[in-house]
Length: 147
Length: 427
Image (cartoon, rainbow over all chains, first blue to last red; front, side, top):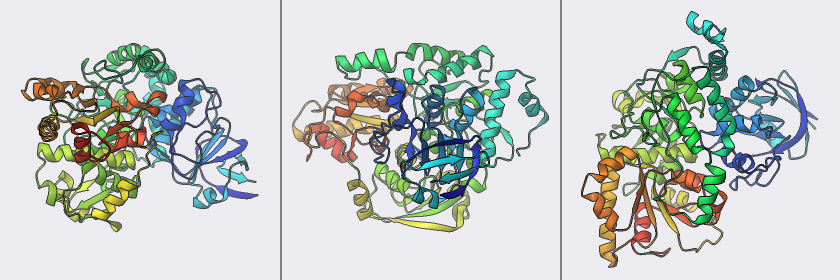
């Protein structure tokens, strides 16, 4: 088991299975199909992301460097949360980008019954260490345990 | 913690209603993530929204907007909006029309009604290139904006010298509703300094969309200071130079996440401050012919059949300028003369803002372009292609933004011209 410490963007604690993207997550490309065509498992639809394409994102501890792509990204993430198709948590190795930050804040402020802990600045070592299927536990103070 | 004025604190405490308090909380929380010191007034005349499409998948966004409208938390600024996703002038088959109208954009009319309630400039204010003179949403140097459309943000920051962060959709609207945005990043002098020096050493004028792509992929969200491009663009922001920078910037923003660039001896802050804009320790990236070729060859072709005959060509992502529509009319005519053909051999759509098209249609170029078979439209090519059916459709483009977000295949301007006037992948 290894422990990492990051900055809390959206507070919460959760335990979930890791899903790892080594490249940036294109939020619109990843979630659009799932939101559009009623896929409750939120299967990633981004053909340009070999790590995630075709994998279920709902309920997973999504580990990534940053989000990329269309500046609709924040509101797409907000929609995923509102429709209960969001990951269990989002864990960024780098400081969070403005699009993902917007999504996290919008969900936190405007949705009452949604919890999606978001931690950033976990470091490059975090993304090198964590692998798909590992058990992740996120604590309120930004501590992330990987086992 | 961010320092708020008494008025801002009262809004946050709910004195102007629960909805506006939530808008304030959103912007304060968003700003604090990036170390914003304060909220500063939005000073541009107009806002611009990135969300122009009544996409069924975005239902929760429309519900949130309804909350704003019902609470009368609407914008004090009028705004333009990204392009519409549908236009009957653009070729589409029965199945595409069915999916567009019944599944994807079934809420378009409803959403446009919401936009009107919130303060849309006018019924035709739909374009990603809102800063065109013919559209009228052109910010002044130093003005603070609450925009989100990435190609418009990078243009406003770099070419016009306005100040805007690379916001997300909805945040753009909330900044305008509140009249304040958090001060961080490109709103600060320090955040506008370059951390990359890009040296252009090509033997000919680099293709705007290819150069932007190369720089975007290298520097990602950082600020490049570009040396050597003035040799090809000159030292004045002419219509031609602005058109080049529009396409260049959109590629930096979509292939990377650039929100501001400086072109030595050309863009306003580079002219004023020169190398003072470069941060100590900035990294260097040299671009020559071979580097551009390397970048071009690195693009994956994700068509099902790599050798398929193109079924559609899109030009204008971001929307074309008047100057561009005219120069492309000349080019297409010349290309057809050379190939001995009368009409383009691939259905071709040139997209531009409704206001730009209106002005274009007043010139004799409009009939000349129409005679070549090229269709003009106000559509958003990206939204048109953003559906499962287009994944199987071989579309070509010279837009590196469209290439990045869809299955469209990129070609240089000269190659596109050859393709549409002569045909064939090796034209």
